[in-house]
Image (tube, rainbow, N blue to C red; front, top):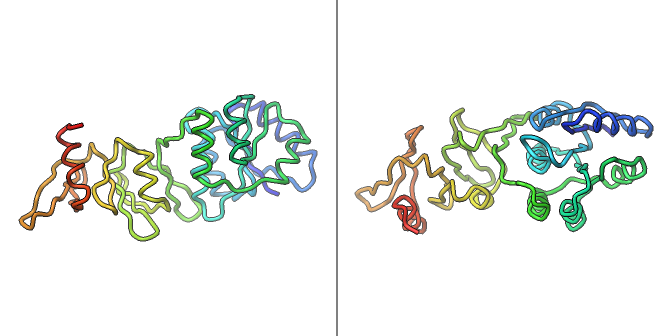
Length: 245
């Protein structure tokens, strides 16, 4: 079993490494002290299990786990946390694996035996119940087995096409495997739904125009793209840009 240890505190990582060294069939392939480093290691090394601290500077453990889930063959995740009533209740309610710090060997062994992949929807529920920020500051796109983080502030719009969603951003275009509905819920009110297939950053709307045929379109500020607005979403869009309640 290949394991990745993720914790911003070196003593916590050392304790886990020491406990795992006493167990058969466990190999620590790497450690990471930040979320970005953890994502890089996951893509490169493809661990079977990630031991992931919940409260990390920058990306939280919940956010890291959601990004990890975008890998083609994501590892199982076991969270580690200092005692927190809300977090523990959330993990237990959603049947998500966790370990209380300081981690005990027998608890670690039990958690490894029952380690499993965690769905993004379950992670969101855990975050909400545990009062952990779960709105992401970046979207994660997969390039082969590597994960690329795209800052939300760099995104112009999302465009859905069958299974995948295209993210148009300052760095170009990327494909992600997420639903437009979930993205709209997570990033409201900064993004506006203009079509069943399109979600645009409100700050990127430079103009809303009506064509000769009566069709509304949106011009995207930084990239100049023109996006169609559906009749269903036109009235809400016009209210938003006029500043109406």
